[in-house]
Image 1 (tube, rainbow, N blue to C red):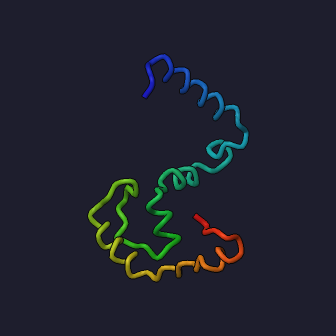
Image 2 (image 1 turned 90 degrees about the horizontal axis):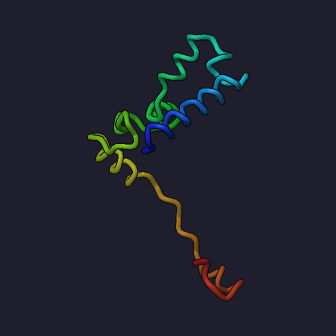
Length: 97
């Protein structure tokens, strides 16, 4: 949260940076592709690239109704085995902690 003056300064600065950047995606891509990019959400990207499905809420930063199913499926996922710290202690004389 910033004051009104600081907000105007930040908006102006970001607009100038965007408008002055010749590689900014909105100025170099077709309008349909820009619209497709802007419609993407983190939830859609996660669902597209993982086995996670409807158990993930549309807003991944808020715990949704599907979070219980997600927690259950994560519990069923095999976890990597804990590393045996004894070998580390033999080599260095101390644990990794």
